[in-house]
Length: 492
Image 1 (cartoon, rainbow, N blue to C red):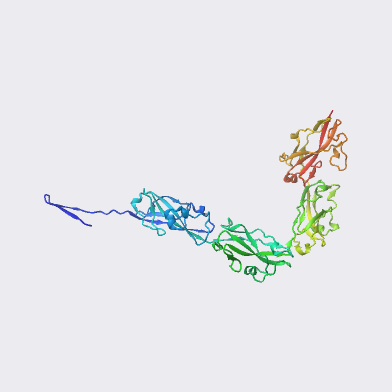
Image 2 (image 1 turned 60 degrees about the vertical axis):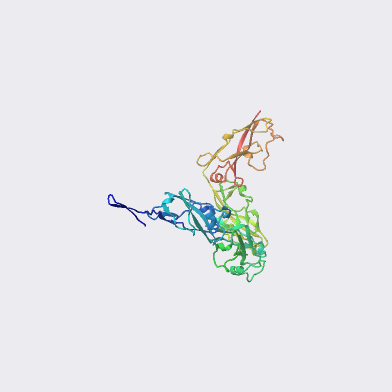
């Protein structure tokens, strides 16, 4: 500093001129790196401004009014600094581990930039201060690390004599982010053509046992996944070389194949009906299946116990299960018969307690039949009307109603009608009874009288199972209907 003295003789005073240096307040900027994993969506970090701070060192107060992160991701600091959008990252997710990317982060200041000294360099570059002094822009670094993979490798089954290449693939997937994102290319799965005694042998490709499964046991084959990104971008469970192997964008695991111990699975649901249901309603095939077999027929004998049914024990037969054509209340078992495939004994094992193999040709399933007396439900059926010469019947459709055991109208119902007419109400549901002779070949009524036909209510399975529509009802569990007799009055 240089002081200049001025001497004034008249009043004997000396005046000096002193220079003053004004400096801006220094600042400290904190722009932390963002650390993510391979496969992270670029858009997921748009609003991530965690840890960003800009402090006035003199007052320790923040200078931030607002932070805006640029949605453009750049390959280098210089590209980001220059805003060179031709060098931006085009992927929707970050593709490779070990890569570093950059973006611009702009801070809107709560004070004029001229009042502060922004000397902090972030990522070796000085910040960009806007011409009007209202904003300052820094370059933020983004580090991409490896992602841990969740592996879903299906255990599959084969039969003796199968080619390894013919064994089903199963449902497989490799995901990251807790199962939210698959890392596989579409359809990028292939399996090996040979099988091995251990997963290690499969991965190391040693001691192959051939390409045809020749005896029961547990074996392994390779299953290879093509990945969206290099395999080095991920971490897999186990040890590379023994539990899995990687090659470029592919990773290979060992897939378990179980041979000769395939469970013979039955699809036979219990029968739940109301008392007085006709036996014929439940007599036929209801899509019953058993792996390695074909449905043959439904038995007509009802047993008291599972053991008695499977052993076809005559002392266990419940003689009170059926009265005439109708089922009585009680819990029973009956047998569903299946014809076995010729290689059933070699290819399958039976683990279902309700299944028994009788001989090399036949197996049976003991099906529970539960017959219950339900609280009585009510119904209304209107009287149909027609005239001689008519071939159509009119009725008051709104009066055709079903009510549940609590007296509430069942709304989810549709109604249809039988096309055959009888002289007596008792004839409608009796087999072998001739229809009235008073309807000609064109379906026209030829004589005034009262006739009878079937009226059919179509219900849901739940409503049908929950209600007892009484002795007048004809229940068809398979087709989910309950039928009654409707009178049709034909005038002259």
